[in-house]
Image 1 (cartoon, rainbow, N blue to C red):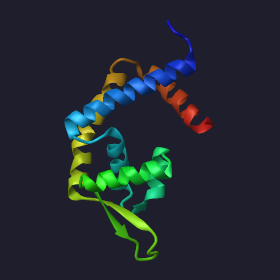
Image 2: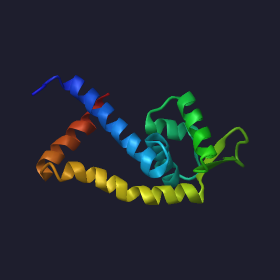
Image 3: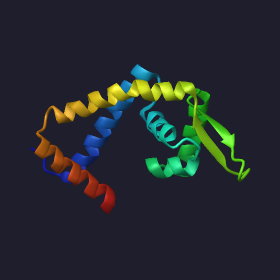
Image 4: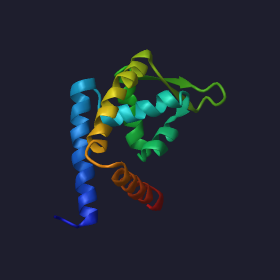
Length: 137
């Protein structure tokens, strides 16, 4: 058994992301990153691009391209803020909202892969470990 922690975390993240991204493209005709952003925008309608960038830990240029692609795919619309004409607020379209509703069973299925394989105690350890990494770094 390989015990190189950083290597294993990196490889697990890459494999999981690629697997889920491919599944999202096939099932929803949308990338996993667009769906993650969409989930945030649906929950925080009227948010700004910088809010999405912070939530997904993406840089400004990556989010700009992401938002353009999402608007082109009719997942969201950009609206000039009435309070500050320089600010653009993001709102999900009906198509975007429907995608998130369609996505929820898929997320439950993905989570089930882990929760079916590990005990509740083991999952608590995994949650503690992953939250430690997120908070620490």
